[in-house]
Image (cartoon, rainbow, N blue to C red; front, top):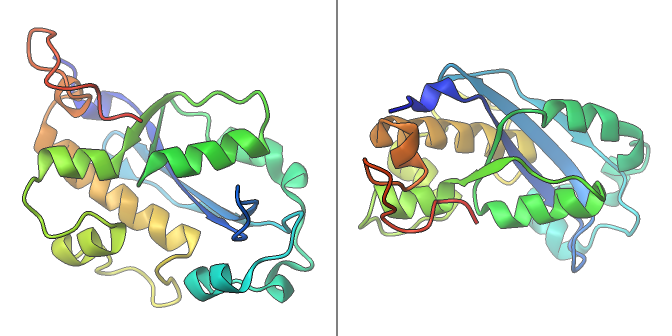
Length: 193
């Protein structure tokens, strides 16, 4: 049985401009190797379409904040390098992965672990599974720099990384983390998307 720490991961979070589908405004990536959370990297990018007011109300980023930022195409190689791990982790992962696939046409994600689905499966009975609710339930923001704030990519990626480590430790094995019963049978489909 493989230990979950045998795999390296990158936790991602994206913030969008409020368009449907959203253009990328901010991206953060946090590596996890050997079960240890690494240093985050992040990018602010100027989206093709302006940031809508309601998106600014959520993450606080304005068009002025990104006016002098590079386009995504300019940072794409750096982003691909940051994402080059065997597994991606995100909270409500299909949102982040779909934004990344739109921005990087032809990019296929590696194995994906969704902390929203993992939390529902591994910690049943909580009042809520939004990232903010889980941050409060498990004190995941303790010790983070005051400069980081919720709904910004670096903060959300760091607390999602802490949540993933907590859930992975609870699962104990990589097979259980993937939703597989010992012996190879599946409890339910893997906690991917």
